[in-house]
Length: 419
Image (cartoon, rainbow, N blue to C red; front, side, top):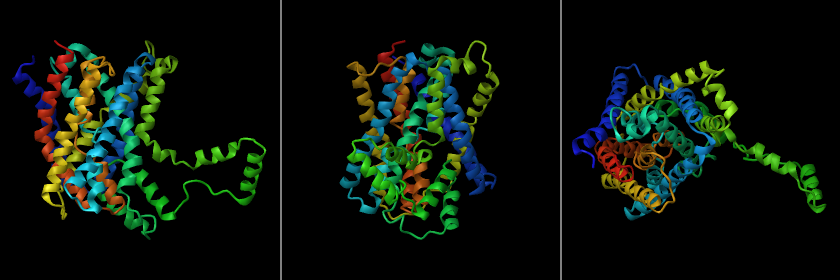
């Protein structure tokens, strides 16, 4: 059994660190240093396009191998289940509480999509400081291994977030709206809560121009395709046109691309040895990526604090519905999913190679809603005030709820990895 005082200190430490870093961002915002929109948009862009990809690639490329890739599948399954179960719980919650139809997708999104790109990056180093259950099993590699697990979560969460969440939060008549480009981008930049500025500008331009998702073929091409079908010949051109029509940049944003590249380098020994071998030829590049990755925490968390410093905003959503959403997101969902994790480990469906593996899975199920959701609601001019209010109270409540959840998670982990 873990000493209760030590357990409380270990669980509270990362939350306190997060609060201090976020307070620094709020102070900079109040002082006019981390300004809206220019300062926050720049810092968000650095995090999304530089720091997070560098951190994701370096941690995966240096720690993942072919033999370890199979052990990462439970992480991918858990993250996918977190989103799917969250969406179902969000749907049920919105209907049980009698939420207005216009606000239901806001609640579904907040419960379904968690913040796995910022908060876990603070928790992992804290868990690996001092003599903890994680350092006893992983030693000096504790932080790097933990970060590689988080990188997998970021990859899966980003892919799902920029596909499903967008469809949930987009107005049905958004494509038909005649929105001036400057007016549509200015509110987006004022958020400063996400590093998807350039990507969202691309979405806005695509919606304004009402582009077809796939190229429209002319009559000659259609006749040729019909002839090929009649002749029994496969029409490879149609498949190629479809593949070209997919917006791969939107489907796989830069953090996801970095995760996939990191897995590729890690699993191919010759490529891995160029950066992290005994005598790496590209060692300066690896060192540069490591240093850039260290900018995530001092960049992303103060940025989050700057956004939250604007307060909950104004909305007509009843406080009972807001608190109900926060309760489901921070209490019910984490323990439903964590119970599944424990069950799957017990029956042998999941194999946990180390304590950090279980911790990352449980933590991913327990964080508040992703801040990117706020940016999407502003981009699509759809329930931005309601989203801001729910996220604000979610993060305030997380300061009290997360330490309790983390303490219980660590206690559960000691059952599987007795010290």
